[in-house]
Image (cartoon, rainbow, N blue to C red; front, side):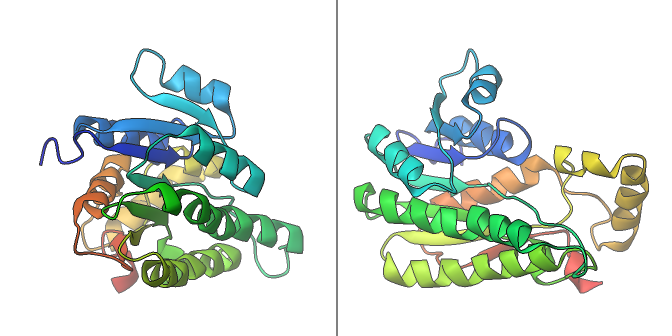
Length: 237
């Protein structure tokens, strides 16, 4: 489907690496002009040096910042929000502040993106948010992550109705090999080996797997209110 986004503008909110970077690359490969936005503008500028990507600053926990971003983008067809602030820990370890930051970043922020970008989008436009496998498979220590992801799954359905005919969907990744797991240190390899051995596809997902799904969500004009599980069948076992 090369060229499926030809002439369209895609705003990708997130970092300049991992899943967000793969989405930017995939969208450009389909002919889109991409605006990459995030809190660390310098890092984004370094990541997208010598590319056609436009770099902007935004803090999704600040509605004023989101409104300013919308004002800076003259036209937009699709908005993709990959941001998260994972509040990991058992119920005895979690703080209200960590839970609220996670919720504000991944749920409230994207709602505000929809609020400020929807009025300037064409009828064929779309939003793609990010949920996650924890919504269906809440392992110990992932209570807040599970609650946040489950909230996203509800939000996309509500927004799909409110913003119609704009489409609103989510991607629900499973275990994906990105820098997000580096905090596990030496335990990372064992964790990945266990996930690879037990999920039905017998491998860990890649950022490119997720980017392909995002392009599909942006270009399939008969899909809305759907959370696409790109998780290797992880919740089945």
